[in-house]
Length: 510
Image (cartoon, rainbow, N blue to C red; front, side):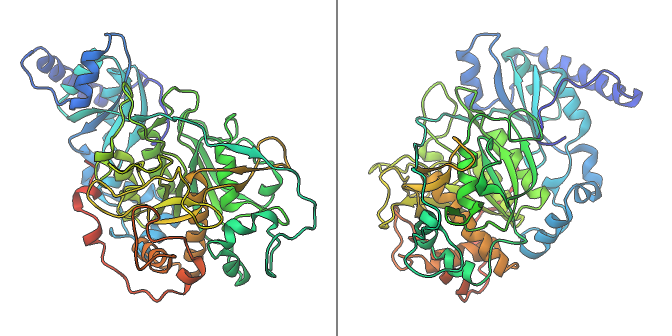
């Protein structure tokens, strides 16, 4: 049950498993009874243990040394992938079409043993060969002594410094066309947000995102009865914060707003770029928590989406703000290889999934970048925000990455973007943030993939960059500039190599 929260493992185990666990328990006693034993705890975790009370719970990653009996064959991993995922890998992936080592299931006895020593298991990650769990300091040290455990680290957590404002919009008289030229569709007052990035031209060519699967990671989608979603096709949904297969019970509507910008469709009011796409909806941020963004939720959601056959992931989350005692990353970690969500996005990209992420709302800092993970990834399309005139939004995060690369990659409207409002089934609002430039960009990507289904992640990135408004002079404020989806569709590309863009270390699980 990869990607779901778990209760304690039941006591009814087969005799063979029981003997294995018994032998492992004996090994644990031998290890933990030696005080001088060097335990494989990260510096972050050691600090947290020293500063906490004995009964405090820590959210941790437990990494395994190997995959045990699973390494004997890969058939099980391939069977866990959907037909769409296998097809996408065959066409777009850097990896072989069959399952990679990272796709193999975790060794069941390892998971069961860890479950006996923690307060609660949270998630299992095939890609990172690890489980996340909640454990006390004593439990952490016992787990670290398990013979099959490689190391133990903290699950990094982010906090939201502020909510992105969503302002109610006065009802628009029906039948009023707000666009400045004739188009096949009536966009109403949402015209400018799609016209700025060249989307109506692609709609006029008949492209809608049909046949493309887009995963949307957000906080909740409670108002899917809104008129903008009459045609929305949701193939699957999962709440990674509670383990439920529904995203509609959340009271937080940020996901409803981002989904409407990406794939909403109600003529005369709101039309998103990819209204004909198929969607996978995932809650990866727990708004009930003081530190709602926990990286294990995002990482296992990426695995789930890839396994389900997603072509595109849109992540309108990641409000990175380093503030003790939250265990987060700093600007120095925005190097494309450190943050776990960035590494998960990289592994999704290696499997042919185009990941689009909000660059962040950290604004400009002359002394450092203000990016959020996973937007620092080399193959992640980081979307910054501009206003309707093409001016950079003051809140839009800037680069360079810690290793000197330009970021964001491209920009789209993130000031007064029109969205579906949670206040009623026919209400709309205006919203600000890179949370809304990201789904506009992801929608454009879906149209590119509909027209060019064999485009690799690198080719999509190259098409967007080479045709954006400042392609000849990129910088760390707007990247390569405003997306031009029509020009990107017609770009003459040759397949670039992945090797210079991404290291083998970034592709690995640890």
